[in-house]
Image (cartoon, rainbow, N blue to C red; front, side, top):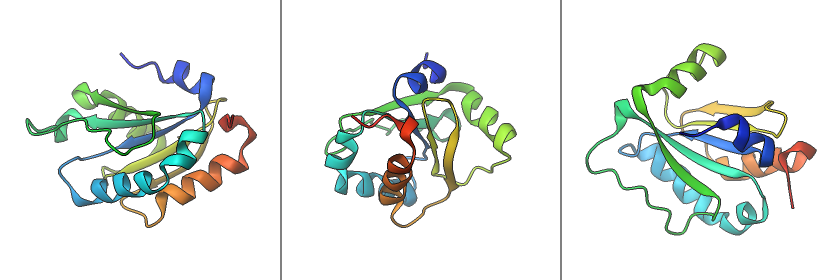
Amino acid sequence: FLNLNEQCVKKGMVLLFIDPAKEPTRHVLSDLKLLKEDFNYWDGEIIFVVPQSVLTPAFVADTTGLPKNVTYVIDYNNELLNSMKSTLKIEEDFPITMLINTKMELLFHTMGYRIGIGETLLKNIQMDANSCRK
């Protein structure tokens, strides 16, 4: 079980709700691969959340070429997704990207594919002292 409070307090995190079978998720993965070294320098966590509703038998949690701080989790019964949807009034437009600092403050969020999401995340991380840069 993933304790987001614990993860966040230590380092800050990027939380990405993804649908691995859809093209926008592949774009986000490619974007993070291009900026791998920059994300490796940051001491936060990048957590790919796969809601159970979009999980397929073909899914493989592949971290090849991604930053070292990437983890995949399955959101059984879509509990985390449903919690975020009600709290933030967001829709299921994957990927849903969130940057949360060590004080559990939501610094940035977006839904759907956004060009340059990796660079946008890094800029927001650099602007916030509580995002835990080494």
